[in-house]
Length: 113
Image (tube, rainbow, N blue to C red; front, side):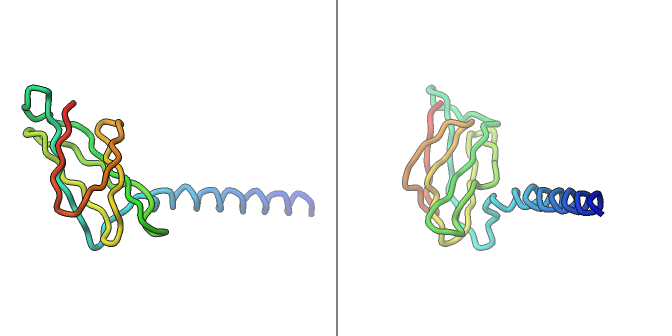
């Protein structure tokens, strides 16, 4: 009987752990009604950098927690970040470096790397 209880407890622990791991993706903000802004990343010479990873962090309420889907700049250095309506974009990360700001829907922001 003791072995059965231990086995059931272990199975329950594994199921709960797997549930949290599967729900970890839900911490990313998947836009349903979306806001967006355009980010340009350039060299100091002014030419666009392609392939730069761009991510945003949202804030503004209980349902506004997490990161946007990572996007990469195109050959001209442009990328578009999208986030859920009703949330604010508080940080933009350019290849992991954070830039805190007040970013708004429809805005355009330039970063020199």
